[in-house]
Length: 63
Image 1 (cartoon, rainbow, N blue to C red):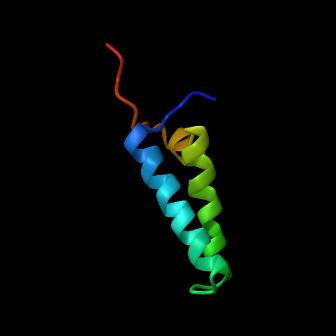
Image 2: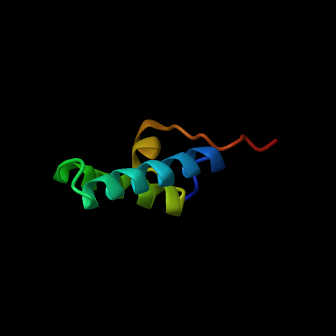
């Protein structure tokens, strides 16, 4: 697996995932908030399968 997420993309995913999981754990939103695990994990590992399937990358291009 090659990293296909930029550092800002990764940070936003981790933050969004933690917020969703936190809101679910406190009962603010329903069980659908556990979907926050997905952006959390992809942000932590730096690889997004959807980006790979679409041939996308937010990483800077190397010259």
